[in-house]
Length: 111
Image (cartoon, rainbow, N blue to C red; front, side, top):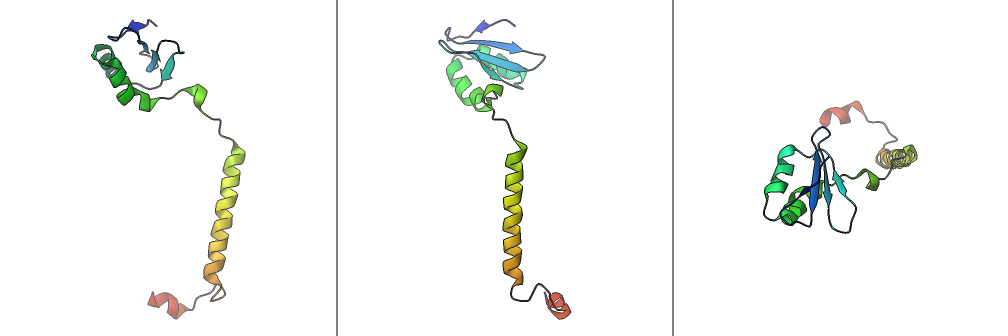
């Protein structure tokens, strides 16, 4: 993968066409990886007169760096599920208190 100098000459970019990963390198920082970037976006970055603007508004919002993702644990989903079930149970209990949880047939037909 070859690094290309952009028109700003301080920023460099590299593109892997097979994986569609775009790497952008700013002075004094590590390369930033952007996943699933279409080839035309990389080409536009190379051709634009203001690569900083193009990067900031068209590429940076799509930043997907594996290093910054938090691992998802099964425990966090379990806690959320328990809280959701508890809230549903409380809601159902509050609604059914007036009638003991049963409805008359005539009440069901009138609604």
